[in-house]
Image 1 (cartoon, rainbow, N blue to C red):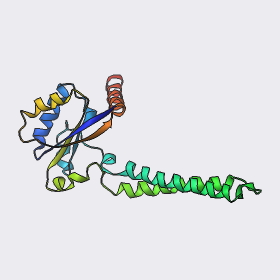
Image 2 (image 1 turned 120 degrees about the vertical axis):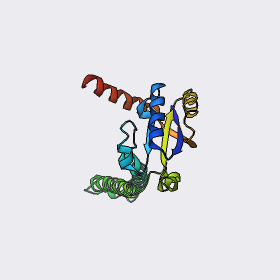
Image 3 (image 1 turned 90 degrees about the horizontal axis):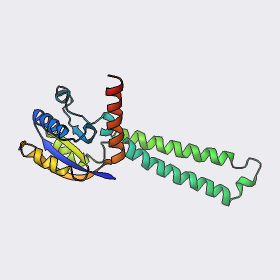
Length: 189
């Protein structure tokens, strides 16, 4: 099940911190809530805000998958050419062509990742101008039925403005993050 991501914009980190605390007290888990800001120093002073990780700020995964798709296509093309040209019927067989296919797949995946590490996350590009203006992007991945909680909490935060809706993280990732955090805080206090 995919969650629905609700984006909000504000220029007040204190208000966003109170908003996050209200959401968490209403049973929305911390892994569902994120803050994206260019003011890292200001965000670090608000210890309760759950910031977007540096990894999530880049387009590493998306670009890496594109690179992997290109590499897989080229790898399949190499294997097909080797088979059609009957080069695999020689003494060397499939080994050099298989090795070349693996190298192509790895190289293009690596190149895609390198390119993506320099690019902003594709899901946040539409908010670049807002972030450059000094505002903060707050987003929440909601399960069906949790939208009521957010609407209720928004009533007491008039400076937090809705900025759109998008596709959220897969449900299993949010559950896994919540369970891992709970495991490490309860088992290893």
